[in-house]
Each structure stands twice: as structure tokens, then as C-alpha cells.
Image 1 (cartoon, rainbow, N blue to C red):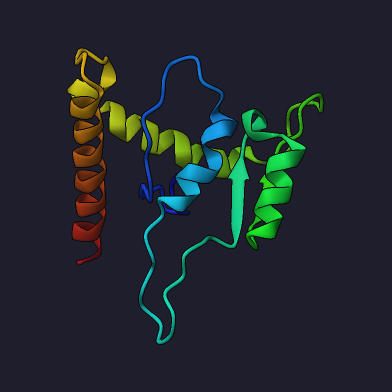
Image 2 (tube, one colour; image 1 turned 90 degrees about the horizontal axis):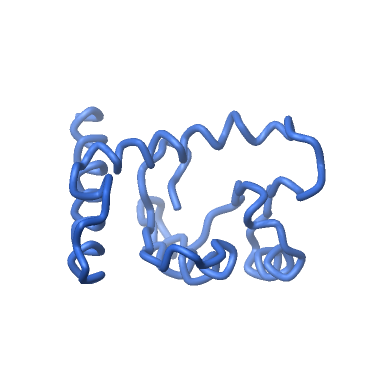
Length: 134
């Protein structure tokens, strides 16, 4: 899960043959509070852009109940839904993660080590982004 700039907000490690949509809500729950403006920190995004793998009525309803507007490409519709202009941000972040050689191909048998390397990579990506701002 990334923000509009491609900075990772939350990551999760799942098996290779799992449906992505089943991990949508646990991934949203991993997003930390965003402080800044006076008042209660925000815990959720306003909108969620996703590809066809996340198209399911149950999860659309659950996102609406959380106050998140789902913008999800529908299955069975022709391509060109317009989400590509937002989807490239996610693809760029995935390519940043693949820039770390240990994450490109998974050699570790233990998932806790791979998840730790994934967390370290997201921290480095965020740190590089913050350095560009300073």
C-alpha cells in the first residue's frame, strides 16, 4: 500500500498462491496514524485505487463502511479504465523494491527474515524520499 508519491505505507508478506483481495483489509489496518494537523491523527485514506484483482462487492462495501471511496477497475470491462495513470506509482515502488537484490529473488527460506528485509527496504525508500525534501 503506497501513497500518492509512491512511498510505502504498509507492506505484508503472503504466500505465492493467495488472492490479493483477502489481504486488503489487514493491509489497511497496518497503516500507522498520520500526524501533522492539529487534532486526531488520520488512520485511513480518503480513496483507494486498485486493479482488477481487488474487484469484489464484499470488499467494496467494507471499504465504504470504513469511509474509504474505492476506485477499483471492474472485471469483464475493456482495458483503458483510466487507472493506469495512478497504477504506475505502485509499479514504480515495486521496481524500487526490486532494486534491493535480496528482494528481487527470494532466497531465504524463513519468512521472518524476508519480511525484515522488506521492512528495511521500505524504510530506506522512505528515507531517500525524505532526503530529497530536505
